[in-house]
Image 1: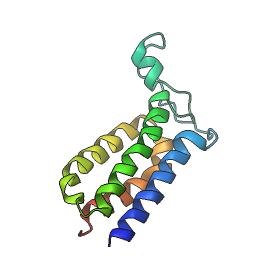
Image 2: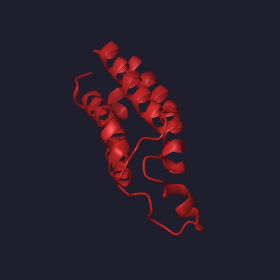
Image 3: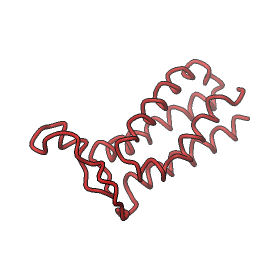
Image 4: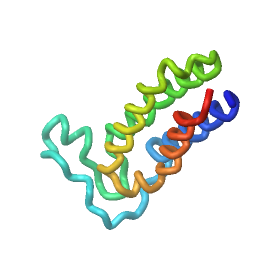
Length: 123
């Protein structure tokens, strides 16, 4: 089961990193990228053009690589139960943040599902 969980971590991390940092902008008619004034710090972090990823999404996509190494470490050493609740909270927060960019959310939904499988599968 540990190998399956580690593979799920790797696949979900790749999916999220790809769509937040590597993929080209996609065509989108959904104008969901204006949340704050552009000249504010929060505006810089979360505002984005339709089809693009905001700077916060890019940063969180990169941060996910570090988090995935932590996940793999705990899963490999049979200590995942110690971070399971924290993992659940982080996945829920990430899913809620994904509502700021509907097209990105559609692309990375499978990664969230894989992360939930990691949480619910037995150790």
